[in-house]
Length: 203
Image 1 (tube, rainbow, N blue to C red):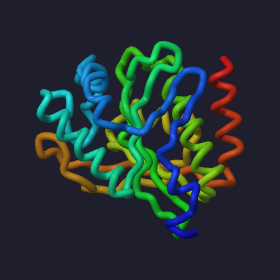
Image 2 (cartoon, rainbow, N blue to C red; image 1 turned 30 degrees about the vertical axis):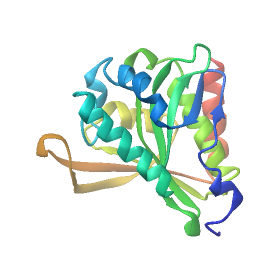
Image 3 (tube, rainbow, N blue to C red; image 1 turned 90 degrees about the vertical axis):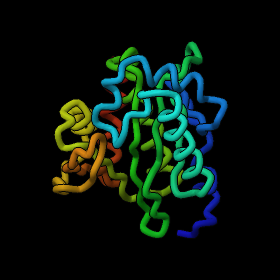
Image 4 (cartoon, rainbow, N blue to C red; image 1 turned 180 degrees about the vertical axis):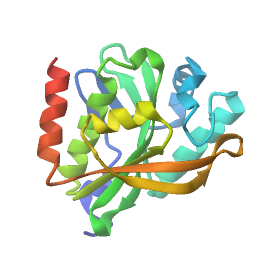
């Protein structure tokens, strides 16, 4: 699969559902994202660093995400409430491997007011639908801190398949050594995952 594939060139185009809308991240989203990021700093506990600490830390996160998107190594989105237009958080396509028809979904965070509303489930449905549809992926992977029980439960509820733990994988906040739990969904599994997500959202 060529890096000039039209679908992959448009990987950052908007995605819209009934609960959430995903728009390509840009500098104009900063204020809304910063407000969402500071709703509860617990959101950042398991992420590589705490971007809610202050405006400087947040701008570092934003500029890194924008630079990666501009370079074409990632595709970062701002996540909006589709009904009110309020910014809820952010998510990304990462580890783009066009030649191997695979990518990762990660750096996902939502303000706690959006937890339990279906926002995360619909965002995953939209992103996975593009990955396995227009992008022709055969594998989508996820990684999270092995101690992040909430994230692991959400991945298992998709359901994504647990593949194991990379021990001493990263050094993250405050010098903490992170073990990373890996999960994946393949194209063969996608129809079952899609049906499950649609059932959950219908409820």
